[in-house]
Image (cartoon, rainbow, N blue to C red; front, side, top):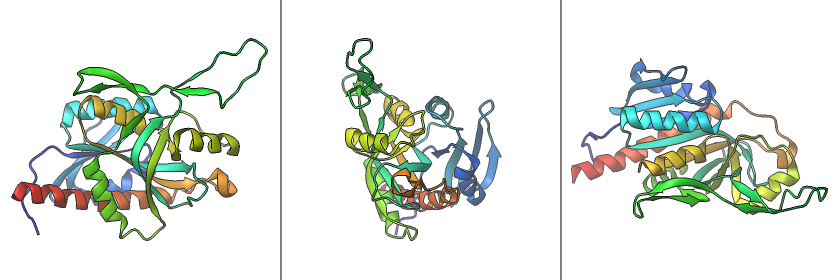
Length: 262
């Protein structure tokens, strides 16, 4: 067992709504409200470690802006985007958790030319991706997928062994400012991106984190599945996902403490 204290910056955890953030805040001590304009940020301590929880509201612009601001203010050692998501894989059930081994922006595509009157082909798309800084090549590169942090993923895998509300799987999570309710379109996105679930924040945060060289992980709990039975959005999934993230953080901090003790 390792007991060395980590002296790095805090972890930043993002969620779009109070139902995706408040449970974690309730577990923290020494909580201080440090808002960015209208956005709520709560800074505190969890079991001896610094933690910041940011409530981003819905959407890619909000989440990515708050990630950049948090990086400038807190110099975090990592950022986790977490919360609810809709299933793209028909095998997933409500309360299953998806670990974002990678994320993609499912609104970043180009259509092929079609003449006026030729109609619309929603499957006739070319993946474009988004631009993020590549520190090795020292330039902005257009990439379809952003990889999750291997260290955070390893901690999440260990936390998964104790998760009792469903399965924990790894794969691609897609992000866009839309809410897809057409079963055929969801099936297409699952095929086109290999996506397991969709939400409205994660990949935009991943893009910012890559540019600033901050480790990132997207963690999502399935709150509804159009593919199975048009399940309504189950808000009870929000606190359950946060409890999983707390378990992930404890595993991550154990890793960091062990490194610091060497």
